[in-house]
Image (tube, rainbow, N blue to C red):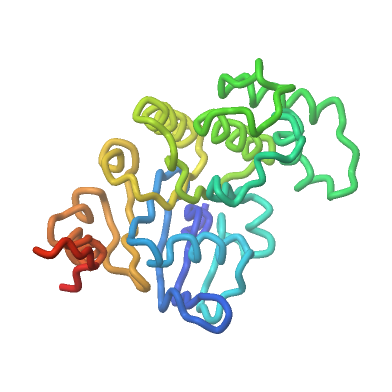
Length: 256
């Protein structure tokens, strides 16, 4: 296996944004296959923009290289699943858990293909693997946040995705659900899947992820949790976003 094939993601010189506004500038990052990788940074720092550009929801303004599983974007995205922020999903839509998971099979058979018996079997197996088979015929919006994440992970599995991108997967989850999600990530990593998650939940990073990219419009630093999660880096990354209360009670955002 060549060097490129050992990488789940390779980005060089990526500049991206929307409506002509640059949000990310000159971002380069490599993620090895089977890694649990996290992207951290302040709100507006470009985490979501990075993921959406990788999966093709936003067009990059400039880049030197963008490969997924050693392939150019168009081909590599077929082996990549994307789980958006929960607030971007219409949870009131009348669709069952099984229907959501079955959608993962459309990647290989096309939008107007018909589901086969194998598609149903794989979807039910994925739900069972993630402890969600008893909810197969439940409307997706009636589930808890943690259960919804399990359903979307099941969809990624039946899509046969090698790389799974998640945008703020722990939002709205209690501590128990977060730790359960971290265990699922570890199991998927052990199975050879690559997890790349944009997250604000720094507490679980040291115990779950093995690689971190710190973003604030550009790359601040990247490396292992011990290398990235230093006091100096956290102050540089987040200090200007901390609220400051004056003697008169006025709340402002501190600018260092």
